[in-house]
Image (cartoon, rainbow, N blue to C red; front, side, top):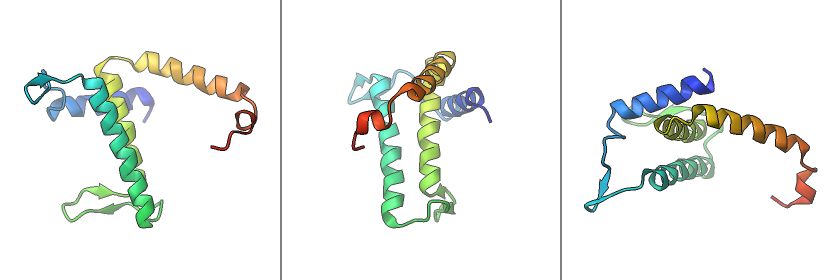
Length: 119
């Protein structure tokens, strides 16, 4: 699968499942979708962290009682799916690919650990 296909499939699935039925309302007010979607990306990263903290093997993919795939890599996949969905909704696939290309190239020019940053 390439990135454009990921973006297309993730967004089409989200639309079909009703995640982009507009307007999105919370407490009677229209929600700005970008902050909400970014918060959901954060939550998937937190779920990956929890899998790690539980001691789940990084390579382990298991099923919940309801048959849902679970595990560290599954949660990271959820992050990519949510990012791809947002990119698809706003039709940012080409802009994202260019940003990715530019950022990867720029990172190659940076100093070792960005002048010895700790993290």
